[in-house]
Image (tube, rainbow, N blue to C red; front, side, top):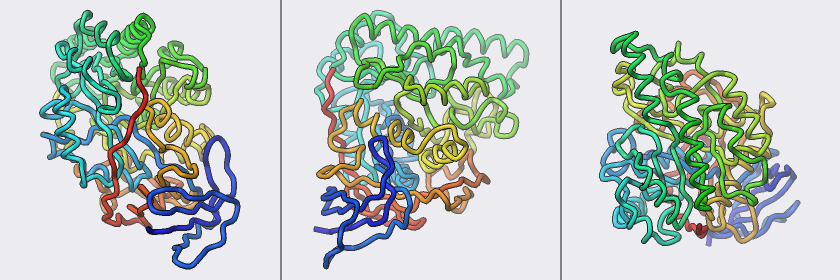
Length: 446
């Protein structure tokens, strides 16, 4: 059994920052104390006052496997994730073939085994016609049921009202939703075409994928959850208008929760001018006032989880015009650095980063013994140097698509080390090649 002692750390965990040493034995945390004396046979890592935290649990990624592996795959994207301090991920079902049956889930888990550097879980996708598969799902087979209540990249739109009611009524686990009202978007697209033809500028994206389109759909999802007492988690919120739908209560008191993604906390619509389709995503990045409302909602408790919606596309695909360029950004490698920059700006705290990006997803999805730094729990840990800048350029990009909307930006912090199940998977700017990821265990039922 390998033994590792991390000394002189500033532990960020469970709402506080304190000095701590952490002893790891095998894949578990054995002891957490103010000071632990090293013993023979124990590797010692001196954190030298750097921040130690649980690994980020990303509840929304698109790693593109199976079927779309020219953009990314489970191996490449999970490796990029651990370089960014993400130790567990939950992958979406809009792949090829789509993950809309229990057998497809089994097949996808088989693909992931012994190939993922981070821990992994998968969603079952909902369609207008697969209610029997949803009813048959057992707790632990999937992290949740993904419902596309708005057309996005891929073809999994659930737009039949009866089908939606049955999904919310019978879902045995949490329902997670992409909320945009497609008819509103299609009307807005028609208006944009009438004005610009096929040369619609990217600046029109937040008007086409409008705040009202988001609110109309998320309101329906919230209403369905209340009617059927379903567990609902609304993904990648983007608007000030929607914040009133969500409670400030602690997540333990809520059955309807909310997520925001790092790019919606970082960018606003002013960046379409220089980044164009590189920041095209669905739902759209919107006004500065919307970004500010999202930050406020994190601090208030209306938004429970921070994630990425990592969705890589090739550089050539993203260079196409507005209607042809696909929506999605590669984000896992830099998500935690974005949050630490926001903390440097005084918008959120280090404690809140851990609360929303580590603790909350573990609690909401019932992730077994991860998401916290606790004795006996899995050693999924990250050491961050908040005083060491990190500049993004082509030479240090790890995602298969090999581009980033952050190229040229210097973040204020650096992810120094990442451990997954007690093994170093990223250290001093390099992947260790240890494939340490395990299948996540989920134990939260409806």
